[in-house]
Length: 115
Length: 110
Image (cartoon, rainbow over all chains, first blue to last red; front, top):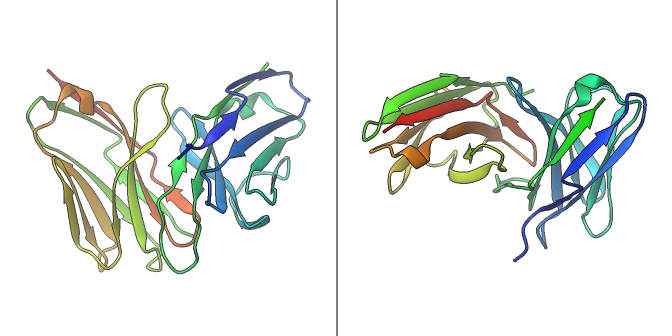
């Protein structure tokens, strides 16, 4: 069974630009969560999508948005990039079934550098 | 919302000793508590998890305990080895949303 795949692995963007990151979950998983990881800040939750709907949202500004497609693949978009957006962006895939906790598996991450 | 606190932030142990990492959570509705290990430059990997209807779970050298009343859970690693050196994250989850602790950097000294 293929794991969670994130593309691209590395990105360098300029301040003010926008960027789109992609995450393909494990086959059969309907939940995709996105996290920002920076040194000293741990894993900060961005949002979670389940069956094409945003189900949960963290405390990030509106410049961070996402969507999920019918095949459960998810994209995350960051507009008007700032230097502070430089981070490792991880997505996690899980079945997301309501009423029970389920294992989440992470992709390799996309390393975004804003210059 | 849920708040997960993790301690200590750094931990150094001698090879062969035990290591304990502790987490507390705030939302009593959380029912799933996984632990992840992240080696340098790699993705977090699930190493053990526990659900709210269980008090303890063990897998070889690692074990997790959960105290629902006190809302805390702990990771125990026995007979530590150099390859256990990594950052460990605890998390609390209810439905699809995982709240992570800030991580513990474990160093096992040979």
